[in-house]
Length: 186
Image (tube, rainbow, N blue to C red):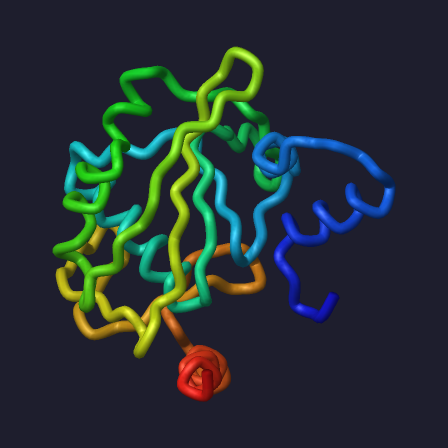
C-alpha cells in the first residue's frame, strides 16, 4: 500500500491478511475518529439555509480534497469522542439523493453531485454521503452564507485536523492544484 491510503483500504487489507470477514460500513460507523476523508454528523437539517450551507461547505471541502464520506448518525458527546446513535426513518428520507443534491447545488460552482445511501447497523439507520473528487478544477463557493462561513469565490478543503476549512496558505492551494495536474496525465 502506498501512502496516503484511505482507512477503509487499510481495514480491508488487514481483514484480508487475517482472513477476517467484516462489514466495511460497520467498521466506518464504529471507527471512532474522523479523518481528512471521513466526517461524522449526528444529524443534518437541509430544511434550513444554515443546514444546507454547512453541508455544502463540507461537500466542497471533500471534493477539493479528493473525495470523502460524511456519515450521519454518529454523535460527538465530547470533543473527539464519537458514539453511533443512528437516525430516524424520517431523517433518512429527508436526506434522499435528489433532495440533498438540490439543497446544496446553489452554493457551489461547479455543482458536484454526491451519492447517498442508507446503511443499517443492527437496528439503527445511518446515512452515508459519498463525495466524489472534483475533476477538472477546485469547486468554488458560489453563494454566501455567514453562519456557515461560506464566501463567494473562496476554496475550501479538508485539513489534517479533520475539519472543513478555507484554504489559507499557498502550500494548501498547491496541494489541491497538484491533484488536478496529476489527473490531467491520466
